[in-house]
Image (cartoon, rainbow, N blue to C red; front, side, top):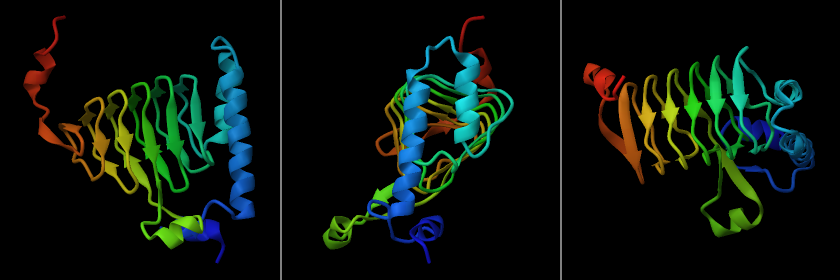
Amino acid sequence: MTEKEKARLGMLYDGNYDEEMARERLYCKDMCAEYNRLKPSQTDERTEILRKLLGKTGKRFWIEQTFWCDYGYNIELGENFYSNHNLVILDAAKVKFGDNCFVAPNCGFYTAGHAIDVEQRNRGLEIAWPIIIGNNVWIGGSVAVMPGVTIGDNTVIGGGSVVTGDIPSGVIAAGNPCRVIRKITDADKDKYKR
């Protein structure tokens, strides 16, 4: 079994010294560097690079520069995806965003984690567990989403949160560790002056 296959299955794998994975990561980093060097006004070129790099995109999506990821092909963006500046996605496993997801600046989605055992960690072994983000989700600024997390539809994650476990649909959640604060209700429609 290859190291890439082990990663896909959520097993310990060698993500640091495996030649195939290192080659794919280097290609991806070069593509990200090229993307980040483009002028913000070069919208067609930016979109073209992301369509080549990412596993799936909707028709409408936008990622502000800078953007970094490990492989690219494990990232799926739903329709009407938007991310503000400084998005990092460590995508050794699948990272899937539903439709109408909005990500504030300085957010990270980390499927990868290192072995807890010191000998395994020093040999470069790590794990990768998928991250699934539902439809209509808003991720606040400087949020970190850890391996294996699922965030349900219509949910808001408050800024600065560290999401270590699953979050259900239709709630506001925040904190470190991130936890549900309350359900989103019809009263929230009148929260802001119109």
